[in-house]
Image 1 (cartoon, rainbow, N blue to C red):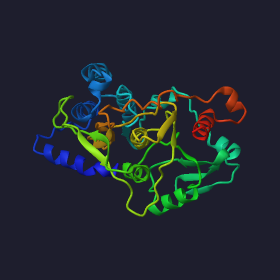
Image 2 (image 1 turned 180 degrees about the vertical axis):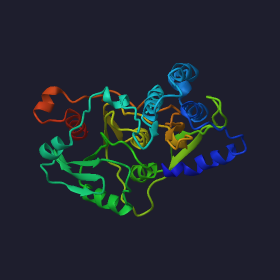
Image 3 (image 1 turned 45 degrees about the vertical axis):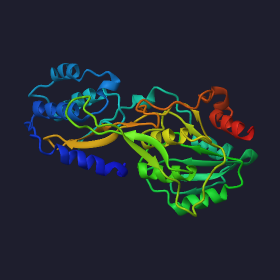
Image 4 (image 1 turned 90 degrees about the vertical axis):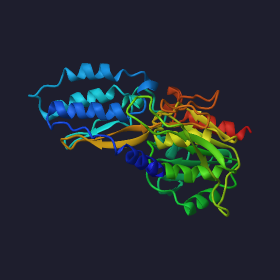
Length: 336
């Protein structure tokens, strides 16, 4: 999420004149440090209805001077799970905590082997984290597995040129766990034709749970002159595994007039991450700057498909080697 590094840095500088709390390097001190760091900087307490003081009372009672580091880690991990946030991690030499229920309680709705075998027939092109080629009835297919590695402008020119004769394009970001929002912007700019409002971002202005700046508008511009653009219909395929930067990608694409989102609700994860450290050296990473869509609405809990296009993969289709979501996208594009 490099694009907003300056904002987070500026926030840190503005807060640097405040007294810095210090905690002892023991079980109680590390627990208190963790709770207080989140209390001052985490950004979704009010939106999620979390009583952080009550969480403190319940988990503080489990801390003892005689507990091992592993026992302390488990208590702290369980406390962080109360935030219900896949962006929240506690990292030590023994383990990294991770909240999985944002996706584990939902159907996966994606099988890459099925697509490669039954739709692309193991004959497709690949470039970085992308695979692409034509599906039946002259529909273009672009699978973006991750936004963690760059997609070069030249790569996008080659992909769009190769698929340029297609009547429509499917962009499949199911199970894409995110990455760098600058990569998201690079891809989105190929589908934007004017200076476009795509969302807002706020940052913490104080330690209170509601202390945020006025949301600052984020605009994307079209790709540079001479780059290949795509103005034909687009379908974006989503599931709960579409998280973090991918959530941002879906948020931007959904507001474009020639784009339809088909599949399941995304996994969310709209907060820009912030990192800190406990006295014992454990690292903690969590959401600190809320991001909103172009309508000023939070997408932390996920983004719904376009109206009328929430679709799961049926058991019968899965058994027959069919992808109900992908088939729906093909049918939609070929009926236009």
